[in-house]
Structure formats: structure tokens, C-alpha cells
Image (tube, rainbow, N blue to C red):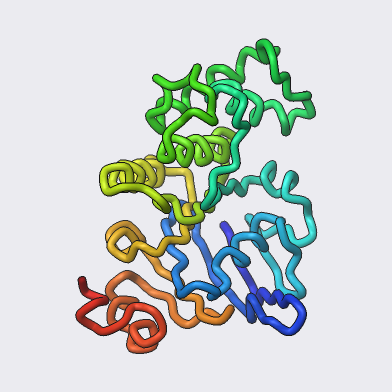
Length: 250
């Protein structure tokens, strides 16, 4: 599905990504963790086309997508939701999703009035129901709660039926109840099938609970990878990120 091979990226003298290779198989669920400055967001920026690597390959179904625009990469099947939601703040939830659907078709986004393609409404409502936003279809995006804005940001990526969904800290800034609802939604999306899901997350309780595999970045390098139990008990990971063995098992 998605293979990262020997990916490197530097900013001046600062190495953000150093020879990172990771395989994300079809229908798998992964977490990318590490301390602040480890290169996690840069890693996502490279995969999604926001940045171009200095070297290495990013293979989606065997095709190297390095150098292609973010728009083309989205169309090929990689969607992304951000730590800070990127929304059309003046549009309703439904209008936002229908606009996202029309954009790859080369249609102009109509800020006032109905979108001309009826089929976009069906897909928009399908995703809204998936994420629990169907009762807020007519709410202006900028008026949504923080948690619902994060859900809408995810919906904007999901509505285009990606093969791979990248989630950058999906529960950031949420209270306990919203956080639990979000992670249940994320897990349900993956369990439904047909989606490779990769998330950056600092909440280790969430990471250990839902991830099949965990990849640990430190100073731009891949420090370790494995299943939750392997990562929880990895001495290098405990020293670099998780703290004491007791804290890692908390």
C-alpha cells in the first residue's frame, strides 16, 4: 500500500527526517510517536506533498509520488486531517463537504447557493452520518465546537474516499469526553475496512489501546517500531520518550 523508503529532509543544517523507511500495509492502523521536534509533522508533510524530500521514495500502490502536488496526491488516495482544523469557516458542514467533492472535478466552489452536482449531497451525508455530523449539516463550520471542527476536518479528508488517511493529533485540545468519542470514531472508521490509517498522537493511552504498530521517531530518525507491547518495553524508547518503565505501563 504505502511504502516509505530512505526518506530524507533537511532545513539548512537541521536534519528533520533522516533515512526513514516504513511500510504501511493495506487496512492497517499505525501510530507515529516521538518527542517534540522528532520530525513527525515533517514526515506527514512529506507524504502529503506539502514538502518535497531531499531524497528517498514514497510509494503508493507501487507508484513513486515524490514531487507530485498535494492536490494530485489527494486524488491518488492520500487524505490528511490536521492538528489545527483547516475549514471553510463561512460555509455550512454540508457545503464544505460538497465543495471538497467538487474541487477535484475542476468545479468552482460556490460560496452562496446550491452545488450543481446532486451526487455530492449523497456522499456528503454518508460521511456526515459516519462521523456523527449529520445533525449539524446546516451549521456554519466556524460555529462548531472544537471537537466537531476536528471531526469536520477529518470528514473533508474522508469524503474523497482515500486509501490512506493521515491524522495529525486527532484528540489535541479535547476534554475527556470529546477525546473518548473521537478515538472511538477513528477506530470505527478503521474497523469498517478499506482504509490504511496513520496517526500522530501524544496520548500514549490511546496509542497503546488502538494501534497495531507503532513507529517512534527521534531527531528525525526511526528509533524503533513494533507492536504496542514491544514499544512499551523497548529500553531505547523508554529512555528517549516514554520515561520510566512504570510510566510506560501507566
